[in-house]
Amino acid sequence: MHLGKRLAVIVLTCGLSAGLVGCGFHLKGNNPSSVPVAYSVMSLALPANTEELQEKLAIYLGAAGVQLSNSPNAYVLRVLDYTPRRLELNGKLVETLLRLNVTFRIEDAQGNPVTEPRTIVATRTYQYDIETVNTDDQEQVFLKQVLIDDVAQQIARQISSNRLPLAKPETPTQPAQ
Image 1: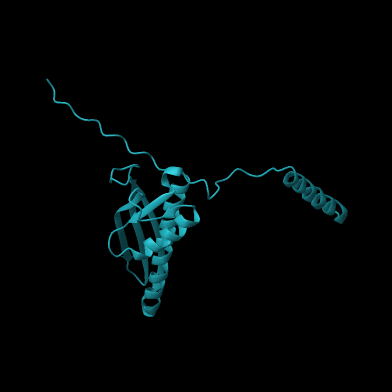
Image 2 (image 1 turned 60 degrees about the horizontal axis):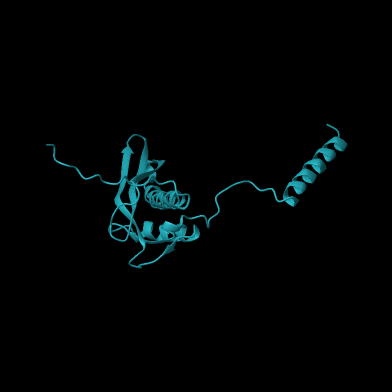
């Protein structure tokens, strides 16, 4: 292509883009303030030894427009299961698989489930040479933080976009006659 044709293509592209922006066109997306009204005020209920996840959830839920509160009428984000796992495949190089499973649901102020339990799984792998063991600990600590951050982001995205399936109401069972 000649320089003149390239310049014309660039000018035309910029002109069309400016025209779209000028007329108010924008791509449809999720606005952080589009949190469902029902979940806009929440409290967190997490198991022991999950302070890092709690900190990350507070950051990401706050950024998504969820106000964290200990109000008695706030919805509760309850983490039902928090299971970190570490698997190793030994050889000259050791491959380590880190996995974090977190199951959560949203409950109302009385403890009744509002959403079905949802499980988030995050995994990372890394390899290291047995002769340089000191890198294993550093890599594991870093990747553990990455897993927790990933899980917290996924939970916040699902809550803010209202992608959680609602809990099915329990139907009372009647004895057969």
